[in-house]
Length: 308
Image 1 (cartoon, one colour):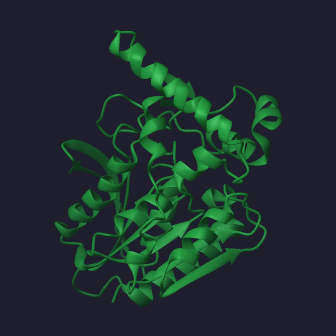
Image 2 (cartoon, rainbow, N blue to C red):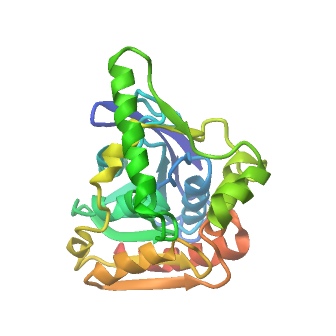
């Protein structure tokens, strides 16, 4: 069952979908609160897309799950719209954990976090909150590394320096009353995406800008002020602090972003597992059943074993 919920995060109201197992779920007759999982969405995504899919599928496996829109995005509060603020995003995950501790359906001592794409990096950082008993990621990236170094890690440093110049100019323009300055996330056409953004960029275009998964509240732009907020962020800096709590990182074997999950995994102290999904790209793990099915099964086993 899906229920619309609202909860606070640093003074802003976040919109979420709370998923609970229905009467047909195995073990649903068991009394008492259930293990619960916070599910964070990819960068530019909303709760109705990949995060909602994983939340629903894990609820079918017996967990209480919460997918939510980050502050400044989707149905959640926050201006300017389209702001990607790593500090706020980490706080949003901790606020979601706080919300779950107030729900009768959820066991406050058995809460995990699942981050997809950018939220994978944010979940690693949010795990400094010891109420998070287990951490899972799918196609995890550190959004700051992605902007600084590119999805494949080979971007010319001059590209990000140019973005920082643009961010500085945008702040000046906003101070002069010229309004919030933004930049477009995806090209206008599939042809442009193929030509300008490479395989990874085209897959993002296909997911977010076509009937495959398009949603009217999914972000099509970010504020330029997001860039210098990301510049000093490092999602992997304190991944070692997750131990001795368990970590599972699920990665597509064909994902150009896989190097980031590998880096985070190498810095983690354990118990930890890096699980590869053969044949899957980064975005394939958002919605393609031949890849999502095995990922959900692995996550259900992982959280089932550790949220005890």
